[in-house]
Length: 393
Ligand SMILES: *Cc1c(COP(=O)(O)O)cnc(C)c1O
Image 1 (cartoon, rainbow, N blue to C red):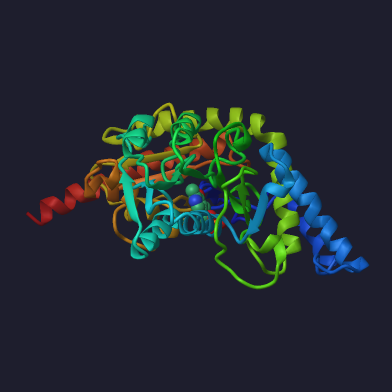
Image 2: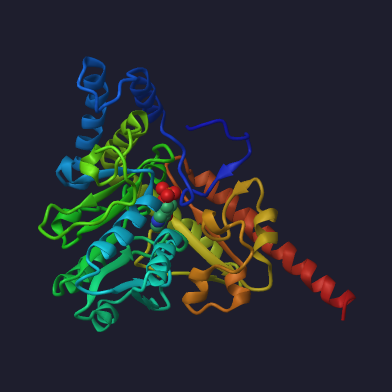
């Protein structure tokens, strides 16, 4: 369906990134041909600007928001940084307390750590063992000087879905802004920030069949939802995020957003069923446990810990099925997943974890192949460990 994968390879790493849909490539190519600067007032500029306007309308429609509430960024990392550091700095005179959780994406965690270096105090909530932050825990952490709360909609390592409507209602009782990282949620679960008390929300194209390097920040059109920019330069995007707009990237994101919202329900039903089948097979292997919530989860992300094997050895043994031990951004890091550690898994089980993530091109045959290979690999690695233990008493 997509790309030029080796014939027998199976891509099961959709949480890391998704293939670019052919329709998206075509849209991007057309936008590249219209090379004008969208800020220019001549015809070339207007032609380029039309691509940007169309994309903003498409993304706005997919999110149920007005197109002028969207700020284009280079991806969810920048959206998270802009929302968190920008809003906290803007509001510093009112208070210097920020709340987030220990299982956020690094783009949120490291932005909050930067705020700590700047003199803010950050409360790091520990989610329940199933990976969810409870409204009660959030309510207990909110203070009069809390200026910002940042929590993710869907976790990228374990697929757990936070109860964002309930969490938003808790924040709304305070004078704090609520930022949501929806990078993994958009295109997979219905995401309509304007219906909730969400002030700022990050999305990115490459998690929903669009190109890498383009994202957006939704900014609720409410009084007081303001932030300081991270970049300074031309006056593009009202100065909130200056720089010449990457027209082809934006056009690709717009097209991808339109496609995922059209296909959301159908994809969700199909991928939920596939994910449930995969989880049932994988969890039937003795000594394999699910990470994250069994029910409040994107069923298309199946993250398991396996007793008696090393995660890296298992990823190697699963070749040519492309999987991850944690998030792609941290996979060069050999330390056990900080997300799984925060949920109470010990170092050994947190280190022996595997994330299967399914997407549009996944088939029942892929799931069967992956599960069969998993069963065989776990058995073989455990046998090898047993042999080694006999030779090396
Ligand atoms: C991928 C991801 C990001 C980072 O997005 P980029 O566009 O790659 O910068 C942030 N948060 C979550 C939850 C993600 O899955």
